[in-house]
Length: 226
Picture 1 (cartoon, helix red, strand yellow):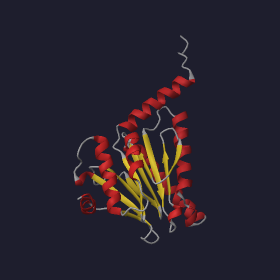
Picture 2 (cartoon, helix red, strand yellow):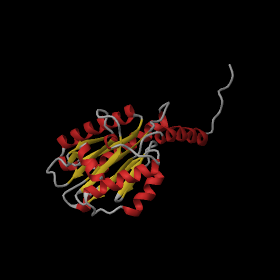
Picture 3 (cartoon, helix red, strand yellow):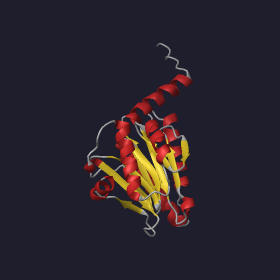
Picture 4 (tube, one colour):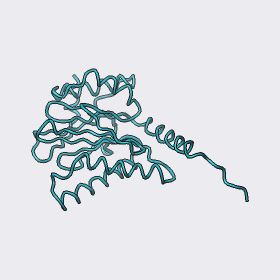
């Protein structure tokens, strides 16, 4: 029996990263943007049933790009994590930072030890009654965790979006302006027009009471873009 081919660890990691990066690159981008009352999460999504942006807990939201079944598994695990922690300790102990760390560890383990890495990236956002308490984290396919300020993006056009948003991001902007900025940046990066009914958007609004998450309707998005 022949000896198995030796693959240097550096090459193995590089190949796995390239594989995952290509999968993420095929995903439609999602933007997170701070506005005057919270955080907007917005991206292209033609499906009305398969959401890319979701509520995790009272003031924590999740967005994912890449393979739907993979980031959906993380979303469900995040809800279980939040429910257990909120029940065992206190609802205030459920934070975006804690959830992002849990996602980082999970994706890091999968990237290193499983046969195939996950082809996803996720955003985790949190708002509190104090605007200074807003948190935004980006978790990459290999578990790398980034702490974002004012804006963030994931998906195929991430670099172009970050450059565009850096020039216009303003945590004090109204929601309508934030929607217009986010949708314009995504369309410009993709170099194509996206119909009003092909957008998915939601906010964490600190004015909403205990549960901050609220989806924006197609009418809300169309009005903001007009």
